[in-house]
Amino acid sequence: MTSDDLESMSVLGDPVRRALYRFVAEQGRDVGRNEAAEATGVQRTLAAHHLDKLVDAGLLEAGFRRLSGKAGPGGGRPAKVYRRVREERTVSLPPRDYRTLALVLAETVDLLGGEEKAEEAARRAGERLVASDAASGDLLEVLRARGYEPYEEDGRVRLRNCPFHVLADSHPLLVCSMNLALCEGLLAGLGESGFAARLDPRPEECCVAFTPSKNNVD
Amino acid sequence: MHLAQLNVAHLREPLDSPTLADFLAALAPIYQVSDAAPGFVWRMKEGDEPTDLIQHDYGPMLVVNLSVWESRETLWNFVYRSAHLEVMRRRREWFHRIAEPYTVMWWVPEGHLPPLDEAVARLDLLRAQGPGPEAFTFKDFYDSSDAACLPAAAEVTK
Image 1 (cartoon, each protein chain N blue to C red):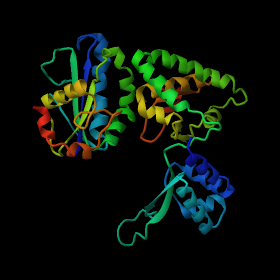
Image 2 (image 1 turned 135 degrees about the vertical axis):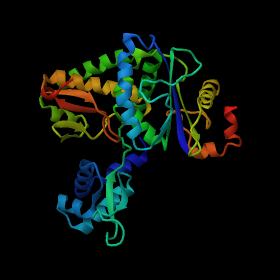
Image 3 (image 1 turned 60 degrees about the vertical axis):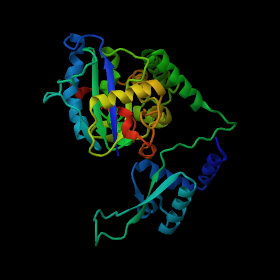
Image 4 (image 1 turned 180 degrees about the vertical axis):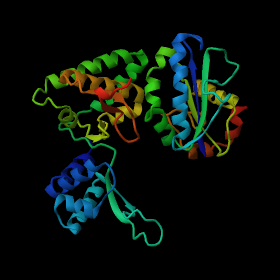
């Protein structure tokens, strides 16, 4: 953790900022000031002020885009838009560094050629995670609680956020395979037979999607 | 500058064995994805069929793949963020693990379609000297500005 991270977090102490941050993060796309103000029930100028504070703190990033969709003359002045930054902020007090060790362990699995064992372990971990989390038996709830940010699209459940982003960036094949196994473990632990976990990666999203089992043609 | 990439893979069994049937069957759909992917520029082809693998002088058990992309991001998105990922997960069924690097990237001038000997020279360079601006990997990546500063970038392949 750096002092920057702690400062970034302290910016979220304001409830309006927290609401704006959550709204922008949940959309998974560029969000304009008007839209953010309406969604959070504050005035546009106030929303703009807080959104820019979130940019200063490195939690959101800003750009300019024509929201009308029209280009060229008559398209209107480009509007300021916001989206969540991809880099995570971690605050751990006292400081803990699980990332470095996880990267070393991933490297070790590669060196040992231990991918299959790693996937087996991930599947068991997925099962255990829901077993110890018995309060919620709902797949979407579990995915939400684990930071996957699930959303539905064409009857499938897709995941907007990769909770293992740094690792998936450095060891994509290993980490995406382990994540798939972990998601299969979650399904097994929940006793959820209505969905199957599949690799269906897209840029900027998690590699796993859940497809309804009854529609499987494979 | 465009980004060239070479992959080599050592077959576990001859190409006409049943073990490799799924690999050969996966080529057509994967080439459809790659050739339509954003940032795809070119890939070396031996014939019109997807299963016409590139001919070379390195023995019948080596499969090679050579392509050119607009950027690291577009190549990355094809390799790891498309249907290609699922096929790559099965690589151990078809190919031997090798300790040496089996993939290499380097920058080429736009419009340059690298011949196989250029590509193999880059892989040899990576294996001999580790990653550098002339031969690198996703993990140890070098920007095109690094490569452009090289005094004799074009001479490396000799």
